[in-house]
Length: 122
Image 1 (cartoon, rainbow, N blue to C red):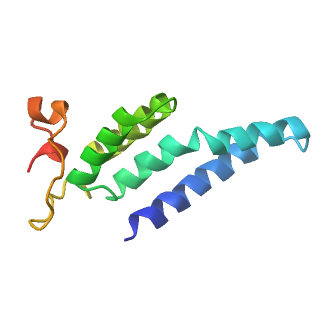
Image 2 (image 1 turned 180 degrees about the horizontal axis):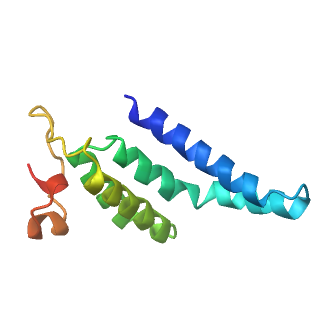
């Protein structure tokens, strides 16, 4: 699949551009760049991955379920899921329905039962 490669390349280019703006050739900016690449880059990658068609409907449901099960990292997991949803909504590459051979091993999330969202349809 091409989505992870495209998302990685665009994420790298964005990080390279941002770090080029703040780099001062000292230890403090090096630490700042490390933390920018460590945490804020995950939602950006999730958005880009969804935008380039990396998620199908069932996978978005699974990410939603995983975010609700996360422990102390729940805020970051919800941010990852929300970024993925935004990327999938504006993308022309997503919205693929699940394969007829895939069986859903759990009930649909509550938000899917209430909404007619593209990633929640059967």
